Length: 355
Ligand code: NAP
Image (cartoon, rainbow, N blue to C red; front, side, top):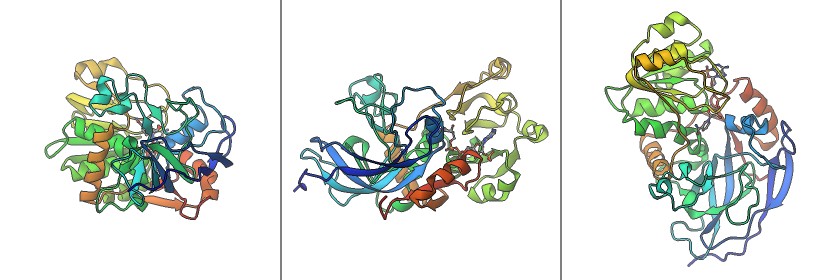
């Protein structure tokens, strides 16, 4: 039996009202449930550096205001539409960066919906495919989305700690799987923040040799405790040069434009440099790329099958982000701290008492 589809859709949120604005209270109504929709009471929401890029509109996307950020969501199902088959009221669930896609194109048929040929529908700063209204994110008390993009937490996964897996975790897990990382491979991780610290944990759990590149000398001991075999201070040219030709897969998760050339030489012949950051242009000298036949690439936060794989893997190996839980009224301070690289390693807004 399904619960009734009538739902109090009033949603309390934190929104910016203009480019570069501060987050302030905002109340709106989520849509009424469509047949395959699920309503999720949000309990935790991770704060991603992409939220800063969006609040500052650094990528120049057409945004509408008020805009509610947040695409790392953990919560519980409180209502389901009449055709929902995979979820029930009370299920612990997670939502990531995407809430819809065309479901017809080649990428969607391969469950790589993040690369939808028509363009994926983002959890916020996007437009609903049916009615064209702006999507609003997880810094809020309620979300309504199609069940296809609402992921039931696997047995053993503690959802209270899991929200950042849905963007930070998925984004680094996807290339580790794509490039067959396992024993005998060496993975480099540049920038040990929200994405980077999870990349270290996943790569280590997959059996790879892990080399972390950081600008923060104060993080060295912590990064070793996260699982890195070696930690390189990326501002020291001699330490970077000592890694020349050693890395099979580099995951660059830096949140600001930075020089790639010295790092590129650390990648092996035919190796991969995955530039995952979304902060400005990637500036690469072609010489190390052509002389090593290296591949420079990037990727999004994973399709639905990859996300299920990531959640199962996280539950099996007990992989969670290192989290600083914050009250909703601390979020503007948290964004300022995140921008100046003062977080170990992800802020998560505790919404269990509402907003
Ligand atoms: P974050 O928590 O702020 O971590 C970024 C890390 O980069 C910092 O901890 C710092 O690590 C390093 N860093 C910061 N400024 C730097 C600079 N000027 N030069 C060199 N290193 C610097 O950010 P995040 O949430 O992990 O996100 C990282 C990037 O990935 C952002 O641009 C975000 O938008 C993007 N992203 C992309 C996807 C995708 O789909 N591809 C998904 C999510 C996020 P150290 O202290 O160790 O040096």
